[in-house]
Image 1 (cartoon, helix red, strand yellow):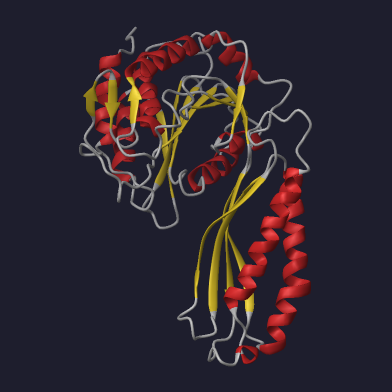
Image 2 (cartoon, rainbow, N blue to C red; image 1 turned 180 degrees about the vertical axis):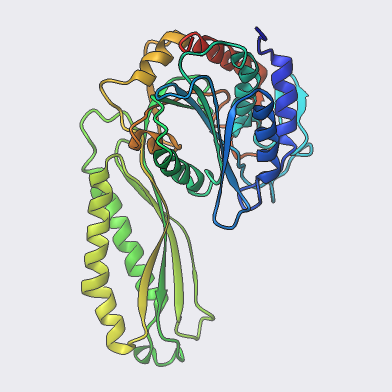
Amino acid sequence: MSVATIEDTKQILDQLVAFPTISHDSNLAMLDYLASFFGQLGARVFLQHNKDGEKANLFATLGPEKDGGVVLSGHSDVVPVEGQNWSSDPFKMVERDGRLYGRGTCDMKGFLACCLATARGAAELNLVRPLHFAFTYDEEVGCFGAQALVKELARRNFRPSVALIGEPTMMRVIEGHKGCYEYTTNFVGLEGHGSQPDLGVNAIEYAARFITHLMGLGEKLKGQAMAGSRFDPPWATIQVGRIFGGAGRNIIAGNCSVEWEMRPVQRSDAALVKESLDTLINQHLLPEMKAVSHSAGIETIVVGEVEGLQVVAQSEARDILYEITGANGADVVAFGTEAGLFQEAGISAIICGPGSIEQAHKPNEFVDIDQLKSCLKMLSRLQSKLV
């Protein structure tokens, strides 16, 4: 049987990094490479394209056509490099001092490379449980690919038992994280001369009241932290990331947009925020705005609502990871992943992967070679659970 080596993994990672799969661009060239790779191994492969056909998910299977088995999952997209001070070409992998530098080496093409290197050996085994590979698009901008994929798996009646999401955790076993809900709320007012503010509807002023209410909800959520919460911070959070609008200081602002997020610990946190905002908007802000202009309005656009990974008492995924890594405990993290989507679909999910989240999204992103070696060892041991 072929054994996955670090040299094989480095060669594959070099090829993956060379694909500039920034979220706002297509990932199809990389997906074609992956489809060809798995096709040559005899895997069953399907691609699921997004609506405009410019991006796709890949799902590949080795082993028997039956329920159960394990999904190795990761995203194909990376964050932009514009405005970052890189010491080398971010899309040409560089090895230096035991590290591999390049955009995506850590987040999370390093894990993908380990999966591909391992797949070569797995293809030669007589697997009694299937081994699936799920590589998605647009994780960095809302987990849109994974949301579409879990629906497609349900439509095709695929029923894997376990999903291992290889986000960078320094190979620690992660059993939980908060949700990540992202929104843009747009305010449409009525422009006019700044000397007569009562004759217009100032969208910025109403947006400011909205933001103030959001900040108040954030403080309220601090008092609703679950006893014994392991998250840092232990409560659900709200954060306003961007606000823009208006045309000039002497013009009543006719428009304003607020980009904000919340990271709920539990779904009831999100429900509280939504209900409170609905009351604020429909009972207070909108009636005041429409009293001056019938065309005034407020609209909230859902950028993405990604569920958290809930810590559960019984977890097949956690048990398997304990066995193959030797870990005797699992942690929780603040950052979001696609794991909650698999869990919501009825698949036992866990997170464990090479590299540190501290390197993700930064210039001179890197993954330690030793981390990749540890990942290869974990995936090799995982194969023993499938034969």
